[in-house]
Structure formats: C-alpha cells, structure tokens
Image 1: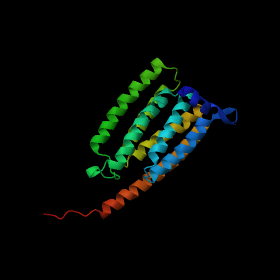
Image 2: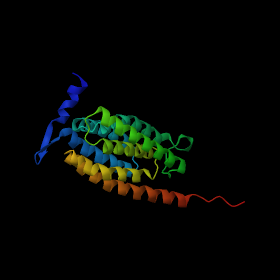
Image 3: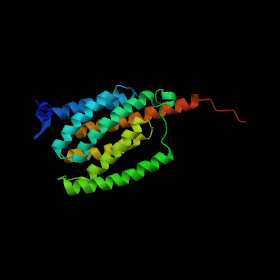
Image 4: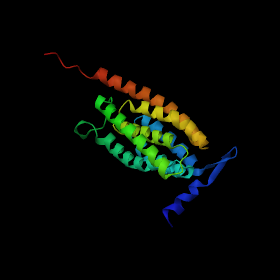
Length: 217
C-alpha cells in the first residue's frame, strides 16, 4: 500500500457545512492546529511534534484546495519544525534552553528583503506553472508564514506580529476557497497569537527586570 493510499481516506468528508463537505484532514488539522498554537503560547516543547502532525494534514488540504504554495510550505515547515525543536532545547547560550528575545535590526532587514524577493518569485511561479486563482495572496501568506516560523524557532517576540498579519489574510483567503472550517481555525489562531504576544512579552519584561544591571565603571 502506497503513502497516497494511506492518506487518501483523510480527504473523505467527515460532515458537510451547508453544501460544502469538510474532510477528516480539515477536522484533524483544526484540532492539532489549535493545540499546537496553545502549546506555543505556553512555550511548551510538545508544540513541535504536534506541529509536525498539523502541517502534514494541512498539506493534504491545500493540495486538494489548489493552494499549491501553501501546500509546498508545509514540507518546508516539517524541516523548520525539527530545527525549531532543536533550537528550543539547545539554542541558548552554552547549548541551554532558548529564552524569549527581541528581533534585531539586521534580522528585520534580512527578513524584509527575503520576503519581498520570495513573494515576487512565488507569485510568478504560481501564475506561470499552476492553475492557482490566488497566486499573489498564496505567495504572500507563504512568505510571511516562513518568516514567522523562523522567528518562532528562535523565540523572537515579534514573530507573533508576523503570525497575526498572516492570519488576517488567511481568514478571508480560506473562506474564498471554501475551506470554511480552516478559516474558522485561523480566527482561533488569531486570538491565540494575540494571547501569545502578550504572554511572551510579559515573560520577556519580567526577565529583563530580574537581570542585574552591570555596575558603572
């Protein structure tokens, strides 16, 4: 039995919203996605294996829905999830557990330049080589999500702002593609991202306040 044969039943309808069928992959993607973001908000290491399961499910959904850049993004996510898992465990000083930090100016510049270039390239590729009906928006959300995942892997506080920006685009985009349950999921993601931003900022401020200030010489 091939991998396709194993995964194909996940695309069968679990129930119908109005006249639109909702697949088992979308239902399970909803559950694992919500749990994943909740664990990230709590800075719990288990978010990474749950996240891997989530991106595999979302990859199936996006291929089926014609969101090819988002589908390809899920494969990149698997690699980033493994890297982020390692970073959270050993990415701190002296290979210690990583702590929340701020995004440097150089990182912002690098992310901005890479983001503009990647969005332009992906938009052209999707327009030229696929039947995507939303090439620019598919490319833009893909680029923002990759930048946000990099930030999350490094525990950069501002990664939550990138996730919030991506979610504000994803919500109407998925509704337009009739992925209604996934669109609802991203409304939940948006609320969790705001909670994550508040929680991570509170933790960062508390740690800064507890850090001794070097004596003046």
